[in-house]
Image (cartoon, rainbow, N blue to C red; front, top):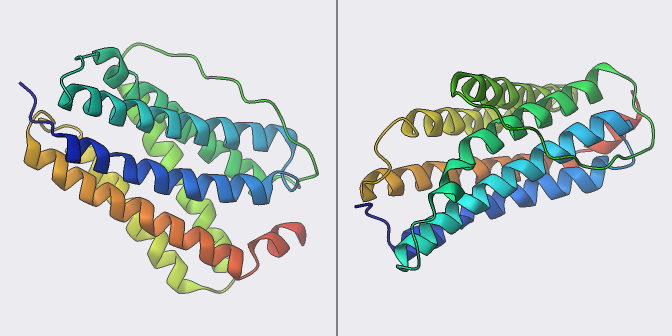
Amino acid sequence: MKEFSVPMAVVDFIPVVLFATAAIMLQRDLYSKMSKGAFALFATGTIDIIFAGSLKALYKLLYAMGVCDFQPLSHLFFPVQSIGFLLAGLGLIAMVVHRQSEGSALCVAPPLFSGTMIFVSCMVIGLALMYIVLSVIAIRLKKPFLILVFVASFLCSVAMGYLSTRDFSQAYINWIAQGINILGQGLLVIGVILLRKHGMLELILGK
């Protein structure tokens, strides 16, 4: 018996909305600044992450309301989100490494694989790449405070990875995880807003 409640399920949507806000701001800003391949990777990855988080929160809400225990919604979360982080991270790395030009690309859903280590690796690598690139941009803008913001956000994501190994059927574990996730995604949104304010686009265009 899982200790999910309706308020808990609703709160679970908050970090999803926060991440979606940061991702959409970056997508809108970088749409015409990245090469087709780089933007396709980044857009596909961030959409996958939003999709995965929404499914997990929806699963909790349906369970808490006594509608159903549709576990496939929960099972999709880990593989889809892991691949999403990897694709998003690779897209940002491509933006930094290669000179970008105008263009965009269609988003294609990634394949699913069996096993868990591949997804753990994808998530860790993807997260690291995303936050490294954002921190590099902050360094180039000479905004050391933003580096601390992104490092704190990354550590929250790492903490979420640790908590995912615990028993999520217990209410207190869910509340702790949700608090950390909201903090982490909130810091990401703040960091992205500040990057935009201090000339991230001008920096990218001036490469």
